[in-house]
Image 1: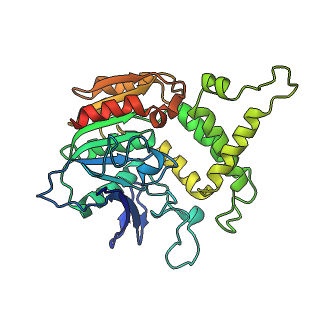
Image 2 (image 1 turned 90 degrees about the vertical axis):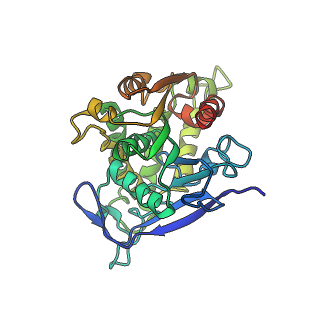
Length: 345
């Protein structure tokens, strides 16, 4: 019998307090877990916890199919696998697209600004709900890596091993510049502020996604995949069609208000805030950590991962060669799978 990931929902009965001082009532959290329920205290399976990236969801078999699933490296048959949909993401967890209690309408811009630490605290609620005391392997890439880093600092005795990739210990002006450019694209769509429905801001969202995609890939990748077949073509348009297509794809599965909210959560990332600085915070991590850099990542260049590996006690730095830039952490399943397998063994 093969156990796949199943979708569940956790309802938090208390007020959920955010790092910025605001609160959320009626917090709902969607997560996926291995089909065979976890038995605290008597379960011999290792626990693998995956933190998903920006516009992904809580089913890693959907967006990491080469690595997660029956017979794969992260096998729900062999391990108790969990992934929680981020706070602010529109795949079931409370977000700007959710109905605000007492209003009968979505939060839209009434949704409070959230931080990476808030997102991690939602994960911790689910961990406790499931009765998981120890996480054998924590995995996160990009904003999922932000979450993994924060969590290892917030609960250093819970994680045994960790793999973080394509991320940094603190958001850089370079990343925030991309985020602000995407927010400007959203604001340029006149339907965005009208809040007449979750279709608001669709044109702005498509544009924001096209901007983001450029940061996720690189010169080499675009040059190899989007060049015109006819070298004498007067006006190049193949890559224009590609950008338009990628924008439409996201619009069909995401909303502009959740996207806007999550860009700010990215901008909040700083493991050193209130902890005496980044290096002091990284020193508190106890998990055996592997930090993976992608050699062509323009969004989080490898010097950021090398810096983290230097300041996390006992950490190992591994570099993966990829033509896909930042997206290499999603695409290079072969070398990533080898690293994960070694950690699980």
